[in-house]
Length: 72
Image (cartoon, rainbow, N blue to C red; front, side, top):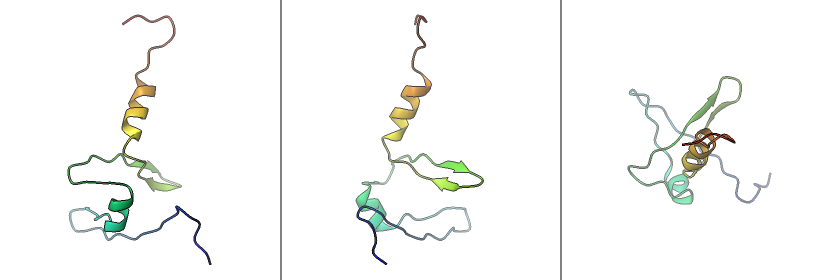
């Protein structure tokens, strides 16, 4: 089976405190550094997703954009 370019899969073990370690290869590819804050999205049927770091700005931009006709 060939792996499509840019697609990855890793495993992580959950520790006693509920923590997981993100594999080094994943941290390197996605430029995750100590102190970074990650957004986790959950769906009981589909599982947990960790979107790219920049998703915070995009998500909050959409959530807090002004509605047409509203003043600050």
